Image: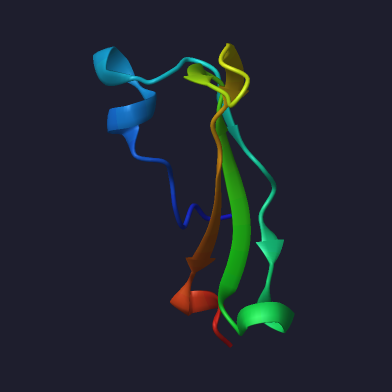
Length: 76
């Protein structure tokens, strides 16, 4: 097993950390969807942000991001 990518340590470690509770999903081979060498994954930093909904009260939501990752070494 070889590490081909990692989260930016600036946001997830040390005094600049957004949270101390984050995770990433398993990586899905997406070659059949978007081509050889492509993978899909997501990141869920478990901090909550408040926003005001159309109803006028604060709701708590959780942040996350869906990402497509290209790894040239897997493009075979």
